[in-house]
Length: 232
View 1 (spheres, rainbow, N blue to C red):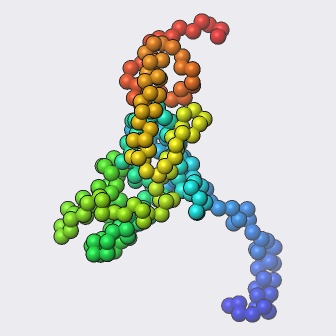
View 2: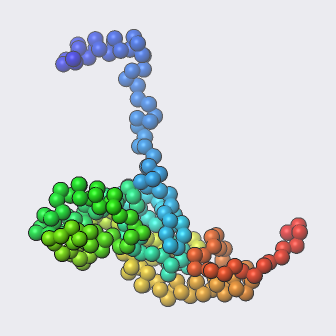
């Protein structure tokens, strides 16, 4: 073993005879690993289509965690319940935080927290409904305790575990919130007007003044055919 400076020098000399760069750091040793694509995907599938997600590790700032960018025209089609589950990489920590937000007498019935969380996430997915309601229902069905979604204290949840939702209109950011339901309600009229404008342009066979990068999830009919002269 190495217990002193002379021990270290003898060890170093022996190691460097075999490999002169034994104590050299590699680039990979200094740079953080790229986030796992499954745990922290670049986009998430929702009822409003695939939405871009960006990540930032900045504790104490508004942008800490995952930010989901939602086009205004898709706002009304977005399933806010799916967003409540956050991204896979934050999901277990989020469920544990929800459990720890419960009153002590209720929280005691979710022990051990890590084991309960693992079992819950293996049995459920975002497509099955709102996270808090699903979690409460699953525990209640186990018997001996009635839990409802409102028992969880959202104010006690670390902000970075809840997706930051950014509603955009083109390059402009219109609103930001970590409360998807509140944001949907606040922008309901503007989203409805944007949807109507796009649909009217499609149904009339006209180009929109603003670029439409993806087919809107709410548009169920194809636009009328548009013949483009050769060479254009």
